[in-house]
Image (tube, rainbow, N blue to C red):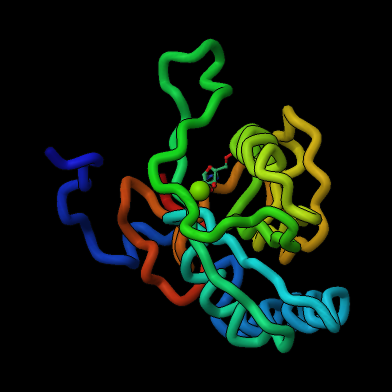
Length: 186
Ligand code: IMP
Ligand code: MG
């Protein structure tokens, strides 16, 4: 059985996009800047880069291509337990292949809103005794934060009201493939 419902094929992009918030060259420039900072911070070390599926996969792949320290890429997929009180707990739907004990970890997200997803995920990963865990998110919406998250690398802060699509971010599984980030016309 399929695990998610794909929205019916929709209208043209021009109807869906309210405005472009970060164009392709702005995103790529910022990705390179973050990668340069990561490379500096981890010089002489090896980094396990963990992309959170599906939203962060495009950012993760662009980011690692500009990191100059040795990298091992891995991915995790999680979903919120819908029946848990407040939807606060997460369930791992695809686990890491790497053993992260004693390793430096960079957790890569597309956007952090409440922070609940990352809060629980970081908790689960810390039980596996990595040497360090740092968080990198392309976008940050601090106005919605419910759990305190130590954000080491942030691409851009975004407004509370905007629903964003593109560069990995979806609306009902669509629009992840856009090379820019746009505000959606809901
Ligand atoms: P939270 O930090 O646990 O609230 O979860 C953030 C997650 O919600 C992100 O990883 C995205 O998958 C999703 N999300 C939040 N805001 C947006 C948005 O504007 N567009 C698309 N997905 C979003
Ligand atoms: Mg996500």
